[in-house]
Image (tube, rainbow, N blue to C red):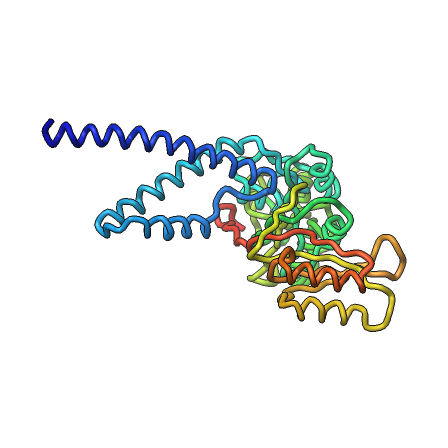
Length: 367
């Protein structure tokens, strides 16, 4: 047997082993896809990919071959993502609003292979996941300019779903009107209350009358269907394209850093060991109870990054508190923290954990 024949024999044997290992790896990928569907997680995880490349490339001692192996493992991961995309086709993603709403745009960015299901309000989108009608929902929890979205916070506190991801989408509001209208024609503007709030300076400058709607896309749809030149909508560039409206002015929100945080909620809980978590609680009606609760959280090494209070729906003049913190609430320190909080708090809920906030690129939507 000459060198060529020997080499071909080795390659045939190795290729058979690679085929068997490939099938085993893709079976694991299928399990990953199932987990991501259950927990509302996106396919792309750049941090995990970088860690795999770094770890696996170190297994190849030959420095000349290492660069080729890096290309090989990256190609394998790309194939794995393609398989996950196919497996996750048909995943039902609920959002509040209509096509073109910012929640719809966020859902498309997070789950590019999903089926997007529109609901008339936050509660209906949330309950669609609780009932099993949808696999997850994408809902706004806070805007950098207008603050928290209290309706969604209340749903998280009172409902059964878990937050398994938080995503930041930069918001750019535009003034949209029917074709042929000019800025001087506009007398009224319609949009979601938060969008109106975020553009209040611009609205006041022009003396527009404000009209509230359920969301920005519905406002744009109403303007398009109404056909009147004296009324404009405040919404995204994509919405203008969807409903055949013209952009009279762009970037009319007061803050260039206007960002909305969206949460992905599912029925299953992801217990992330190294990341952030959301905790909600009520305290007993006694002097200093809240201060003691916050001290307990800090004393156990959990860095609080947000603290909000919301009126309780169960009892007048009572409040619950919303905390976002870094750390693992399922660790020994976390368990001890929860045990101590239990002595002060009437209700405690770990509403979810996630690896960290992810910024969504909205450039392709003109937002």
